[in-house]
Image 1 (cartoon, one colour):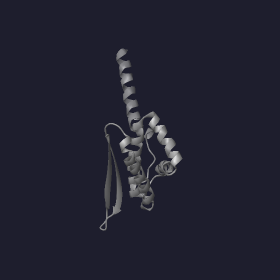
Image 2 (cartoon, helix red, strand yellow):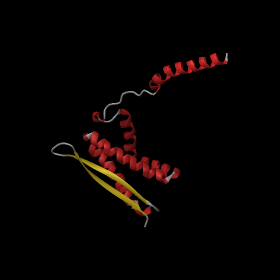
Image 3 (tube, helix red, strand yellow):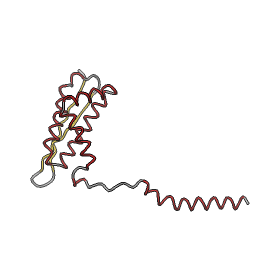
Image 4 (tube, helix red, strand yellow):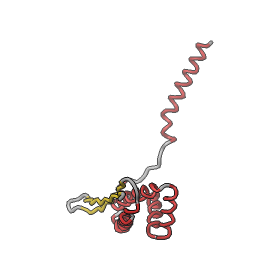
Length: 151
C-alpha cells in the first residue's frame, strides 16, 4: 500500500509540475511597452512632470527637499542624481523638450555647485549630459561632472 501511495504522490507531483511550470509566465506577463525609439511612456512622462514641477516652483522644491533631508540627507543627493540621469535620457528621446529638460538639469547641478561648501564628509559626484546630433548621424554627448567634497 505504501508503495502505491508513494507512486500516486509522485505522479501527482510530476503532473502538477508539468502543468504549473509552463503556466507560470502567465502570472508575470507584462503589457507590451513601446520601444525606446518611440519616445517616453505615459507613466514616465507623468513622473517627470511632477519632478519638473518641483524644480520650477521654488516653494514646492524647498518643501520636498526639506522632507527628503529630514529622513536622510543622502536621499536628496540620490534623488537629484537619478533625476539628472533621467532628464538626460529623456532629452535624447524627445528633442522637442530637450531645452526644458536640460534647463532643469543645469539648475540642479548649479545648485549643487553652490551648496558644495555646506556639505560635509566624503566625495559626491553628479554627472549631466548635453546631447547634440552629429552631422553624419548619431549623437554626441558632452558630460559635465560636479564633485562635492568637504573643505
